[in-house]
Image (cartoon, rainbow, N blue to C red; front, side, top):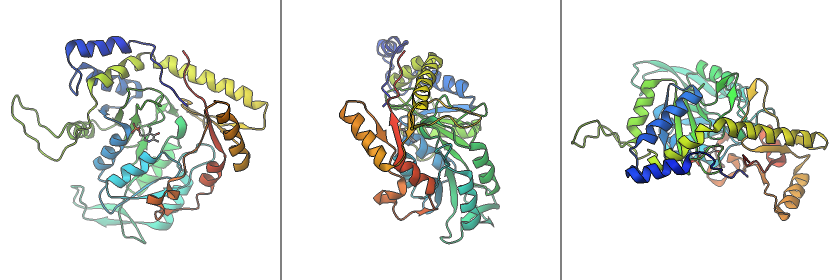
Length: 369
Ligand SMILES: *Cc1c(COP(=O)(O)O)cnc(C)c1O
């Protein structure tokens, strides 16, 4: 659906890693890649991780997601979003998406919170003496985070979501794994919530082979993240001192080298993606198939180009026809609430999600430079 291309200094930088022997988790490209991504996205600090899933896991831990709490997300997402929540021992709550973003619906969120959540003053375990926190009225559990996802690179209504969550004291983590280069009202996706997460997997718009990134507005929180990704080792010329349980989540220099090279010509990549999307738009304008366009006030990276078929039967015919003829097309993911691990999770009506599930097809979207 989206094959990687290497048209810049990828080989040169990789040779530099090998020639200097800096192939592992220390090296100039690691720091450079973080700085480049922070500058490109406008984040105060960017912290690189071994992949997007780990970055999500760390982001959830950083905002205090713990065992037996609940995390709100959309059911139309890639499995990694829900898995990261499960790694924390938390319960996902799957809400509906909007028709014009395929991302978490602020209305669905508002309604679910209004009906299910009560804010209570409490002695908190987040190192603050007393704070009003949101609890699920039925389960009694804390709502510890909300994770909207920018589906296929189309920005979700993130301002509205952040605003609603702030009324309930719920930290927002943006799963921006698919949306490097996508902007909501001029702001880069992943920089509007408390923490944003990017992925540089091989099928994403920019790849490091495998990799991820955490984006922060709060520099101190970013430093804490960096510490956690590097086994929580404190700086010392020769002693091994670790001041908490840390993780080996830092990206190797060889991967970061590829990322630096890719980011140097990322504007060309994005321009090429928009050109492809505009060809598709013009083509489908003459058919009875809808081509999914970027939401209002947004700039999408058009990571995956999406069409909406009339119904499930037409969709299946289309998938069958194209795949038999060697054109790779794919349906949307099975919504999370239908997977056996998550079948018992709380949901709302999920009307739009089910509608999309039966109609979405992603069509070839690779960059050709
Ligand atoms: C790709 C992706 C991830 C995970 O990224 P990896 O780098 O593959 O671990 C998370 N969430 C979404 C929505 C994704 O598309």
